[in-house]
Length: 147
Image 1 (cartoon, rainbow, N blue to C red):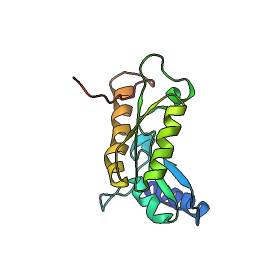
Image 2: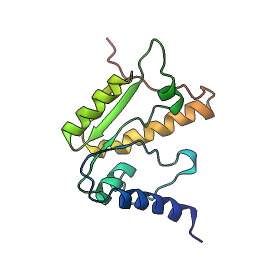
Image 3: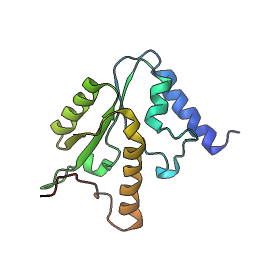
Image 4: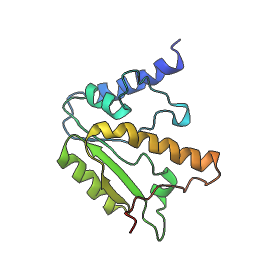
């Protein structure tokens, strides 16, 4: 029987195997550590970076990590949650930002895929606020420039 961490790594490998040779955009909304999902990060890379290594022809974009599924199903009224987006492929990043805007979010370009290390951690923060601090599953983050 595989250990829990090996099973989870096997799932990432299964996803990569299913997408082998895929050249399109792959949106990674993974939040390692959320829901008991752990990923070995000994080299300091994010889940999205590991996925990009496993699917080298795909264009991996990190996005939607700090948006709960409740907000995706029923968007907020008034405030517009921010979708922090990063990818090494600028065109793929722009496409996902446009998608985020189309479905009612603000897409923010956070740069190259190595920024996913921080963006994935934002998902952990939102989870902590939602369940550890009592904000509920509609809590999210909003980026803005203060004047």
